[in-house]
Image 1 (cartoon, rainbow, N blue to C red):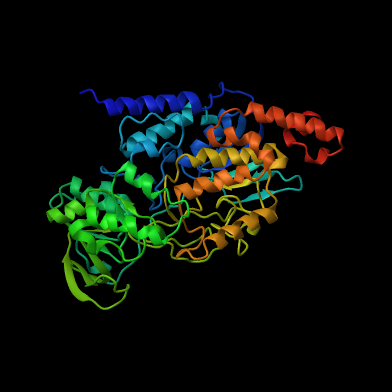
Image 2 (image 1 turned 60 degrees about the vertical axis):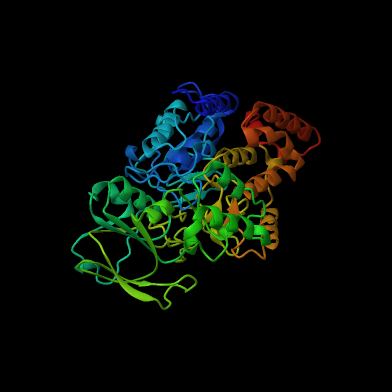
Length: 532
């Protein structure tokens, strides 16, 4: 049946492709410097590499896994992040119009499944001829510089790189915590990433955890027609509708923090979305941690096919879980009513993120059941307090090294299209820094920007860079270009990927002028190399 909205959606995607997509280079093209090392062949890594080579810059992708891991990443508990477990119900939790990680994407539906998303990444990888630029089964252990400020990855085997993009994501290997009495349970225990391997039809399923992984598991239980599903959550977490307009409106908080008027969207959510289940809404503010996007969870609870209980796990026994059910407002570990929840299958959708990438300290950053991938391959000075991740320039560039961009892997919490439009912007900002020395931020000014952002968000209930909305992120990126007149010529390229040749021509003219007035040290590396 003819659908006018679908037609407009397809036309919109076609226009974005024609206007904003860089042309793929010819096969075996001799691309120019800078040369970029990209660590990770997931969605962000492939997208960043496509932007690089599409604009004529050489890149090489390093992927720790094999070819089968291309484009496959489990993502953080964030509103606009792909949930891509190998399960039937897995797919994009928000409308794909807001999840365009590359302008060439052509989504077939509003909420594509995992297979279509992975296929889109692979198509991008092939379109931009990244096959011979990807090193699979190559785990990056070390990235370092020599005296010429060039980067090496693991060894000198791969040559020198001008810049590094870390695209390792926020969720790595599954984490399954051990709980008291777990060995005595006579049913099946599995991690939320293993749902495709179990048969839940007609079974009593208990899900331990209250984040995005728990919601995925709940969806899976519904798809396989489980007899009863019970979610055991340690704390309350905001759920917002699977509605593109609502999600974008919530992401328009430019201050990126809980403000006085935040009670208005919170009230509206309780009144018109939670309705009779407002007891499940958190007491703390909406703009303090990443909400979940799902319009079906509350309906399943109303139908009686699912239950959502707040409390603490006491122990397992042969037939299920002993649970301390707490009332709203009672903190974790507080008093409650002890109950027993029967189970045939227990799904572990909880755990901690040990901050292995953050100075090696164990920090509880949320309950999502996955270890956070480590950034320890970066130089030690990137993690010096108080400017350790996520407290970096634009949350992505470590002050000691402007040629490193940790794209989408320092993220903690927020509301916005994380993994979306800004992948290209961050990549192009790095390219701008590398080819035009006058645009590079001074490390002391990078630290000043970080401190200034902390000052502006001093009254926020969360640290300055631990929560942001998408509008705040776009303001960061806009501010980055506006404050430096030498970056103005790059604005159209940075924000839209249009016109790289024009700013390069301006840089060439600026280099000529600097040679005349004796300021060759500020010449671009590209132009200087042409004259060597």
